[in-house]
Image 1 (tube, rainbow, N blue to C red):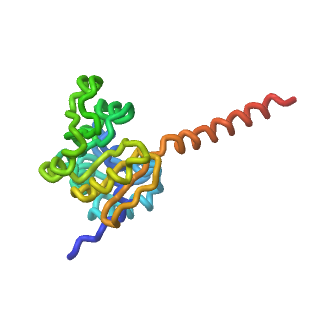
Image 2: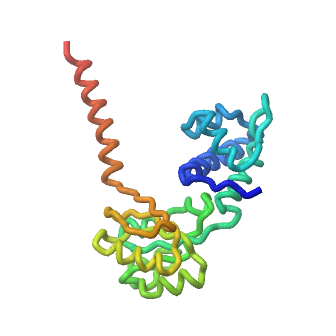
Image 3: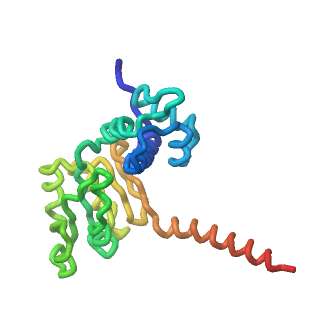
Amino acid sequence: MEKQQIPGKTIYRLSIYHRCLRRLAENDLETVSSSALAKAAGVNPSQLRRDLGYLGTFGTRGLGYPVVELSEVIREELGRAHLQPVILVGVGNLGAALLRYRGFQKEGFEVVGAFDAVPNRESYQSLEIPVYEVSLMGDFIRKQGVKLAVLTVPAEHAQEVVNDLVEAGIQGILSFSPTILQVPETVTVNNVDLALELEQVSFFVKQEGVHSDLKEVP
């Protein structure tokens, strides 16, 4: 029987379930109910069951899901049985900060190299990950079999860099560059707009401020 293709949104939620299950395992919990796991992941139980249905049949009525077994199945489905190689392009302040982040390996990813137009800056000497000249990027991607990239270049250079990444074989891009990128349908781009995220948080802060002011009105 041909395996059913998993939708992109389900893949995203599976990643969240995996993180929740890993935390449960760290607390020595052997089983978890669908309602408890769904609540931890921020979804409803029926959505959780539909998503896990793509992986097969899990769980026992009255007992719940086996935490370690389900975590391992999701991990394998997401390709995390082995660390996935990732590159970063654009080693400015944000890029350098991401290279110093210790959490990637914990989530199943390994940043194997970084690329910049000026690879010999003195500030790079404290980085454990090597920074290469951007002209070497294509050959590096092909030789290392890299499929994922983090993009932290200025907006005016982003599309040009993405074109080179796609040509070299990159299939997934996490972009911090504030611009709309054009890629083939076979390539996935997730945009992280920090200003937009802050704007949304600011809205709720303002709303809280309005409520506070109303409480003070006699």
